[in-house]
Image 1 (cartoon, rainbow over the protein chains, first blue to last red):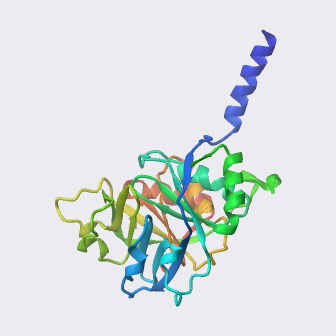
Image 2: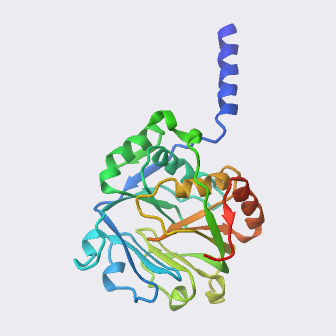
Length: 148
Length: 139
């Protein structure tokens, strides 16, 4: 009895102390490698930028930023890094807060640079391919599950 | 590495500005073609996935038959930062997410953008100020 009470008490304390809700998310790695390329703000969107399973094109007053499969990028484009693209398994409502935070926290804690793209349904997070191993390990340790 | 996990890591303090345009976030079918109105304006972002075509563009661009739940304020983090920079997005969204403020994040090559629903932008700005982030008027 005494032990049970103690456990309950400890559980309540841990809950209070754990400041933020720990979420366990499911995620997938999209097949292949991705590129992140930069063009001038007034550049047209190249045909190669819009082909493939995942593409994202952002135009600001400084740049045209392109995310697309690495193999689509022509050789004359400077885009040396290859990125792994992870998809959080949603969909999530906008009112569900803390999803992206709980996913990137273990990555930031391990010094892994990230590139994030939210969509209406979910979030995508890209990391450079050489960090894919440590990324997946850090996410696993944080309780997130890689789906095949 | 583990010893410096989580909240013990000092967060970076950032400067950011608020873009003048209010944005809409619209979902279309994954095989929809990109509408003309989606690509006009000072900030647009179009993401196609296996599930959806997600359009972020000025709210004023939307034709009457297209609905957007909210208007979003676009916060531009000062940059540019090298792609190897770490801890930028987390430093910015942590005070928001921990206080129940939804964030929509778009990284671009040079900078990161964080969209916040217009009706809670004052609360968001106050939380960002408490975390040491500074709202600036221009780059």
